[in-house]
Image (cartoon, rainbow, N blue to C red; front, side, top):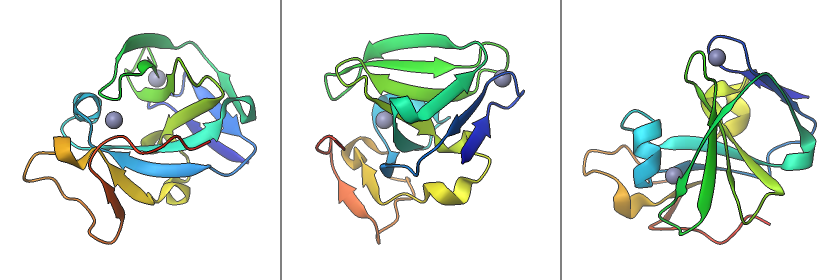
Length: 136
Ligand SMILES: [Zn+2]
Ligand SMILES: [Zn+2]
């Protein structure tokens, strides 16, 4: 069982499967959400994740053209989840919220074309300049 929570603990979740994919994302929106760095996101089937606690939802059009819902704790502001409106069967969990962050080692870095020149990008990982193909 994979578990996690926001910084203040008002939002908790659990997932009963391993992530389908884990990637670091340097898209422009993630740089806002990640305080200047990439976000690291672990993808799960939505049906495998159970969430407890109140979330706020901020939606906007991503660089991919997808309408994305980004959900966060309204008390502490921690970014928790994102999902594309066109692909509701998948949920992306922000890796910093996992109790065991070791399970979220990224396999690829995406949207590297949007990264600033000082970004630390692991040369050993697959590097995708823009949006990769859908996970499933
Ligand atoms: Zn919180
Ligand atoms: Zn991103």
